[in-house]
Amino acid sequence: MRILLVEDDRRVSAVMTTMLQKRGYAVEHAATATAALEAAPCDLVLLDLNLPDGDGLDVCRALRARNEHLGIIAVTARGEELDRVTGLRTGADDYVVKPFSMAELHARIEALLRRTVRQTPVPASVTEVGPLRIDLAARTVEVSGVAANLTRKEFDILASLARQPGVALSRERIMLDVWQTTWSGKHTLEVHVASLRTKLGDPGLVQTVRGVGYRLRAG
Image (tube, rainbow, N blue to C red; front, side, top):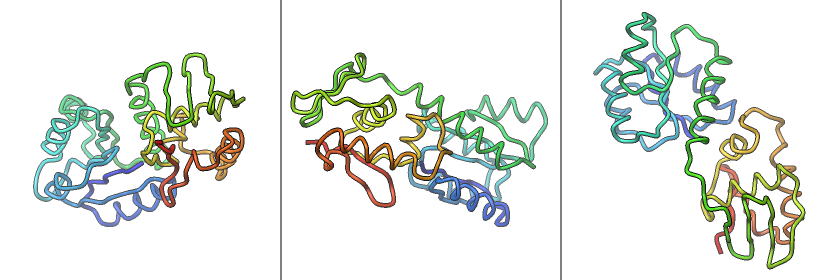
């Protein structure tokens, strides 16, 4: 999960970047409105509204115009009710007033990402990828015509990967799809993936993408 942190205070941005990275997020920092608008695509933006070269509300408005599904959380010292209302009406999904705890910010990030997952279009009931036939409604899986007996979590992991075959999904994205949180035991996902590979009978179907997560072999 990639986060764009827009914050001009170097001390604050350094602390936030460290804490977010410890929670498994990839973080890009932008200290100005210009840098924020020139940054690479991301999954979520943490946006300070007081920037040295422009108003963060203008940045919010521009980002929202580019991508209506982008998660945006305003993180700012502007705490008046009018400021909150204006921020939300401009396009922010949530509004966090400084000072705040990282625990609260993390909870708000997860809540926003859960809403984003729920808004993802529902795929067709039956998905076929290579030798796999996955029936999402019946929650059954066949490998070359042979049924695979998966646990609920193993099935959910496979379904998450099957939505975008050939595309590398981050560990955080899969955790969010399956457990509705990115904060779990260090090896929880790895243990389930190992079991899933065994039951599918072809370890190469679920491929590890070093430094990112996993992908389902497309063919």
